[in-house]
Amino acid sequence: MPAEVKRVAAMGSVPPLNSLLFAVGASDRLVSGLPPRFGQNPRWTFQKVFAPQLADAALIETQSREPDLEAIIALEPDVILTTYPAMADAVARIGVPVVVIEWQEPDDVKTAMELIGGLLGKEKEAAAYVDYFDRTLARVSAISQSLAHTEKPRVLYFEPETISQPHLIAEWWIRQAGGVSVSDDGRGQEVLSFNIEQVLAWNPDIILVPQLKDVEKVFGNPLLKDVRAVVTRRVFPLPVVAHTWGNRTAEQPLTVLWAARTINPEVFGEIDLKAEVKRFYATIFAHPLDDETVAAILDPMTEPPY
Image 1 (cartoon, one colour):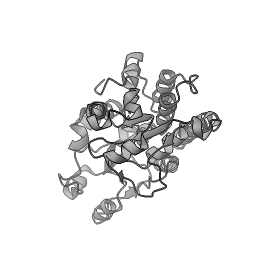
Image 2 (tube, one colour; image 1 turned 90 degrees about the vertical axis):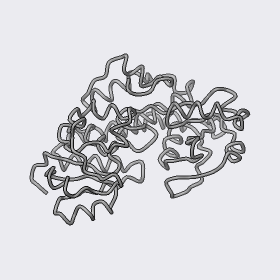
Image 3 (cartoon, rainbow, N blue to C red; image 1 turned 30 degrees about the vertical axis):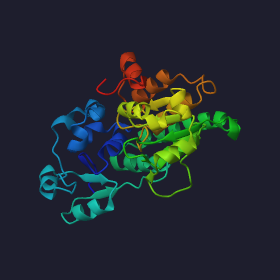
Image 4 (cartoon, rainbow, N blue to C red; image 1 turned 180 degrees about the vertical axis):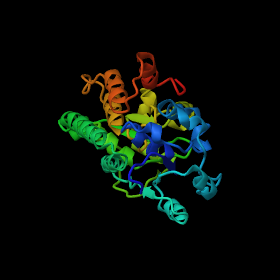
């Protein structure tokens, strides 16, 4: 590993990996582009806002999502970040240092941030992120823990198209926000698949979905018309900025704040979500957002580009 890491590339789960660099003020060190599945999708527009060079940066993955070794050699990165050990093994053959980020448990983002901070000489920024993460979670937990189990809304986070709960981490942020995730069965696998009959049996109070088009799919499905969340019109899409907040991202503290206000608006009424979002991106990402942009991010009827 070079003594000073100036050129960082990312492979695999690129948006969440990039978000780690955004959070320590190192977005200018990213030298690899977004794979087409992200770069050509307007949902990830903010990746290029935080790191404008991504718009023209070289791609280092093939269409089959394998490392493009020739492109990597030409790019000359000091280090490559990935969440996939198989990708790291392939790149190791050409002598480029690779760091595999283990990101399974919610707290892993703090470990990853400290690792990135040490790698890039951004220890102070990494420590500031960890402190913010802990303070935010403690603040929300102090309120949510006061709720009796029977007072907590029953929540389902799922993808209507695949009828699945796509990300294990959602069980965590729903719980942290004072909700009861109906799909939280103690599983260890990332994805939980089920069927419409199971959704009917769960009959959640609130349904959360990855994006706006999923809201339309829920309301447009006649089989779901009697589900409590549909009857009460409590179906909401997760915001997306650097990455979808419902997935793994450096924005996890905002996910918890947003979920708390969405799931329990009366209980968490003191949280000024617009102010929290503005403060996070201005101080943690070092990229201030104006009021209009923040309002669009939090508007459930608006999608990127904002």
